[in-house]
Image 1 (tube, rainbow, N blue to C red):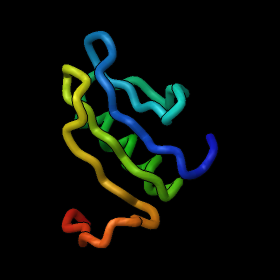
Image 2 (image 1 turned 180 degrees about the horizontal axis):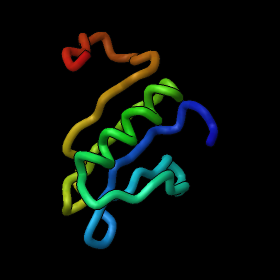
Image 3 (image 1 turned 90 degrees about the vertical axis):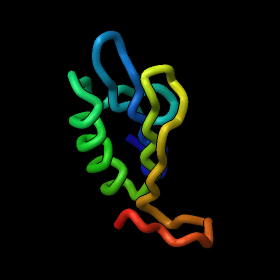
Length: 77
């Protein structure tokens, strides 16, 4: 997987997938929480952004693990 590509947590069938921007599937999970945990590790390793989607596909949350161009302070970690 190329570095700096965003990692997405997306609904897939009855579960959730961890995907890299551009379509490569990293893993499949039964719960969104387990997909988030796996996706967070990948995003941290690649210093990229984690994008978490709702069951309807809308973006629910984002978390940046790289050089965030935003001047706002990250309060999650």
